[in-house]
Amino acid sequence: MIDRGFARSIDFGCELGVVAMGRCGAGSRWFHKALWVCAAASVSAGCNEPSKSVENADQRVMLEMLMPRSVRIVGPFTKLASFDADEAPDGLDVLLRALDGFGDPVKISGTVRIELYEFVPASGEPKGARIGEPWNIPLVSEQDQRTYWNRTTQMYEFKLQLNVRAIKPAQKYVLGVTYTTPLGDRMMDEYTLELPPGEAKAAGQAKKR
Image (cartoon, rainbow, N blue to C red):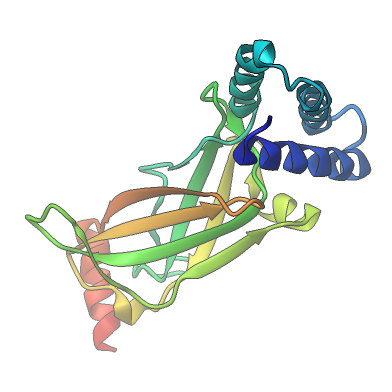
């Protein structure tokens, strides 16, 4: 008997195989991974005997290694940034890497939610009040992947506009990222940002305008 979580992975793998073949071709890495998932599903579905339980457990471990297991905000490249000519930060440059069971970078599909919070010093929970509204970024189409995926760095890069008046001079911030898979599972990471002195001064001047 296949447990519900494993069955969901199988269903996703089969769907992924169809999408990968249509968009990337039958020779793509994702297509071969998805085929492997579907092949394992066929074997597991016909193995209900107790003697196959160990084999099925091993198959599950191998399958999980091929899928995204975690997301990591990549610092110090993730930072408050200025997207215009002045030094005052008016945006966020967020670099995100997804890792499989081997610790290797992989592409992901689903939704990425990015949130910026005030930093609470000398606290076991440094994440304070949220600043502004969250950014919900879809990774559901081929165009989404082309827009955000960097082939050279093997990371996703998101350039997000930010209200400069929300930035307080000489202060730290907490950046939170939540990745939601097509199956509804969530992976999260947090990173502490610190505004350099020069940029903090520029932010203070911009806020007074």
